[in-house]
Image 1 (tube, rainbow, N blue to C red):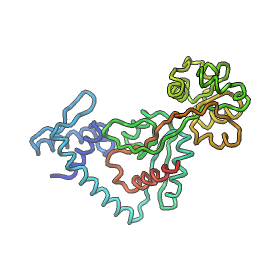
Image 2 (cartoon, rainbow, N blue to C red; image 1 turned 30 degrees about the horizontal axis):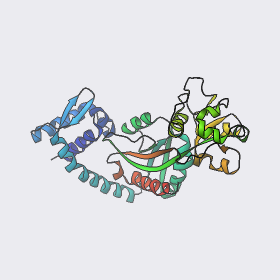
Image 3 (cartoon, rainbow, N blue to C red; image 1 turned 45 degrees about the vertical axis):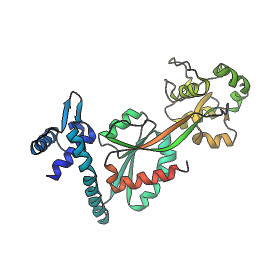
Image 4 (cartoon, rainbow, N blue to C red; image 1 turned 60 degrees about the horizontal axis):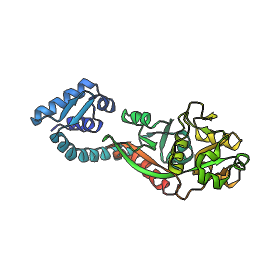
Length: 301
């Protein structure tokens, strides 16, 4: 059986789309369609059900993919080992929200530069956009708080991020902690709100987890909207109001007394970060090396 046909078949199986597989393989969509039809004629069985939006494998297609994919990935590893031995440079493309990449991911990957790798980053929030770009082959790895469900991806939990309700000392002095615990967010009335988006994603999650309620999410609910958590922290530090922030981001400011935790709930709200790659791409040595390094670093985050 032609290995090129099997490679195309596995790409389609993982991508769930002829068009997406064609982009990943560097082929035209008609070429991918033709190769799949050739393989189906050779086997005498259909491998995919054509749908309005993509394809789904038949039982025969699933069985063939489970048999063929590990061997194709092993061949790719051999090819990558030879390429690495020849000194061919590799570039890792990684994407994720700006503050998490800047403060967590990139410092952990920096030593790879001394090992002959180059890095290219995209600082972008929005999990669906990141996953779509990963599926299209624009990135090798992404960091996201959304666990992907598509078979195209493989995801590993990186770390849990604790969220803290903080304000500058001036505003914190106006809050009665006992009333906040007993009455919830009504104890914060009159204090301006700082967030990363008009939809109040962090505040909404915190309010639901700690107070079992929802905040006012009208467009003017936030006094300051800044699409970078580092900017949110600086606004809070400067006295703009209160915010919900990851503890790792505001730990130093808390230790110096520049911001104050308004509440320390018994069970703090957590958000899990995932490191996501396309299925099969960990056979690429530079992607696998970065993936392993991040998982080891995350154990200490």
